[in-house]
Image 1 (cartoon, chains in turn red, cyan):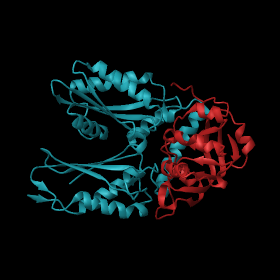
Image 2: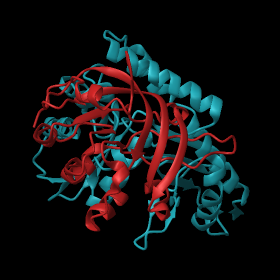
Image 3: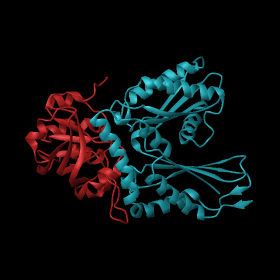
Image 4: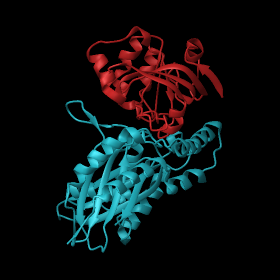
Length: 167
Length: 270
């Protein structure tokens, strides 16, 4: 298992489909509503350039201060990929298969996080801060610091996938 | 006439929390049966086990999608509610969502978030009140299907359509899946019975043809190689629960519902 930081951009770009790793560092969280709003209003904050976007929506923190924060289905967000990639996002994280051709076209990476395991991913989120569209609650754009997220490279920059995709 | 006490609201809300934190014993057994052969398979199984441990330790929901809660209530004819159960539940669940560390996953068209359940009450010949809860996330819910088939279709044809739907679902709803199949009545009821079947708490697979269809689907779906977490290992479908009802002579409604591997179902009796 490799350990990588989100700032290791060149190393991330070289990852191959099927590689598995622990990712740490700062990443951003965006899902359906906020991406729709950003695209519609042509808002793309400069801090998202060279960033990794995690498709997810956290729970509230419970009375013990813990939260659950696993990935959501990426497929729904495929329509926003050209917008993200053209603005410099280097990779996305989510659950489930997604459009391979777009990744191949832009030479970008898609990381698979395991769905349904919110407590595990939540325990690895060290800080969380809504940075845009805070009124969207769990669907806001968040900046998070993560410590060793278990991930698999599902699609690499050449468009290779870890599992043969049936169309 | 016996009135149902308002304490039932506490019982339902507490059960909702428990089913969201404790993994389904049936699913756990099915997942841990599988022996991982590669590093990635081991990573998935270890992550699943670790998630169960962390949910228990931190009291966090197994999945951040704490779902849309459906509450099915079977009441004998001599019982009644003298308060608005759906309204009371809505208030309590919304006020506890923060404390429980759940998510406000429900949104209205004005963009307001909440965590509102749906409640269904129906009469039964039972002697006591039976309440079944099912919390279901958006990923698996998006895989739901309704087909209005030709009445000449056989059980084999139905199985073929179900297995095709499982294949097309790929890994979008967190496999391994549990299927709920509703056949018969009208389009509305077939969907409703498929949801009841999915809970596993309403006499599914009792009739010979229900059992036969379930077995056929389970057998045929072994050829779908999506597997655990879409990683191509383990069964894609671990259970198939079928309810078949009578139908109009010109129709054959078939509804398919998927549950993810974080099956969150609970039952209580009053």
